[in-house]
Length: 238
Image (cartoon, rainbow, N blue to C red; front, top):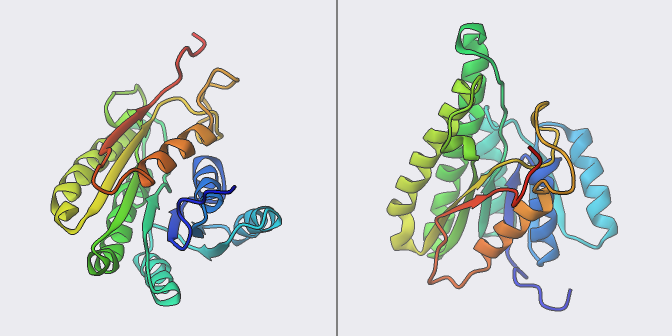
């Protein structure tokens, strides 16, 4: 790629070992960023690193459980210390447990909140000092259209994504004076293994499509911010 728009920049992508997160990490690295890959499984991360390295992409794996504050601090702090900067943070890691409220355990409910919202809070809080010092940066939060719509059996999951929308929009207002952009992406149906009930097929939005949206938002002129972007299939199967 001749014109690498993120050359010299450093990005962290959580949940980067598969699906949407892997596609986002790949897209950012192809644009020239050094991408720090975060996910729970060292084995999965190593496989991604081998794949990306064969393409000549610059990536580093950091096994991270986003529900554990010390690991999140190590991920962000280690990135800033090692590279001297953090330009882009993509909070993509998330879990979904789809059950009716009466069937869902407290542990399952809490697990989603710890990753889908608290993990975003921890990573964003840790990243902000470096971004504020640099007077620039982008935080991209991958939400879901479940953060705007209700789903039967999705009370716990939807609640985390609705809350993420509120967190993101408030954070945007807090940090824009430091030229930090906060972008929230709301994918609808995407062909991944995230949900057993997810729609499949070539007419369904692909992980690479969501990655293209993230690159679009991150590489936009710094004077402009696309604070919320919905991504849905044009004509999905019924």
